Image (cartoon, rainbow, N blue to C red):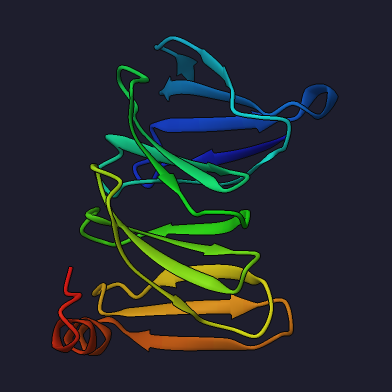
Length: 171
């Protein structure tokens, strides 16, 4: 069982794994008491590997297997599904402006997704082994990624965007 708290400390997401099924629960907490509804949704047979809030705490993203789900916190409504193909998503991060989701996966890939549509913006092979960590810099211009082999890299996102644009692949 693990808990993740939103940046404003008003909402708590609680995850646990009964009988190898991922039980994704949202608890809305304010001043130490439960004020919202609890939602349960079985995502699949495997555990939820990562969860993150947008900076305004209106949306939450959870990742399990090869899929990241973007949800509205207030309603619990699923807004989008980000499918990463055959490899499991291992880590996620949301940009400081709340508009971009970064995912890392077992296949050494980094993917960028639009929030809230879930549209894939870009992807590239980032490491020689499983990506285990992703984080945006406070200004959102740099993405840090870590790997199973102990290495980490810093990616200049404006430079990547310019290179993709030159190939006609700008997001």
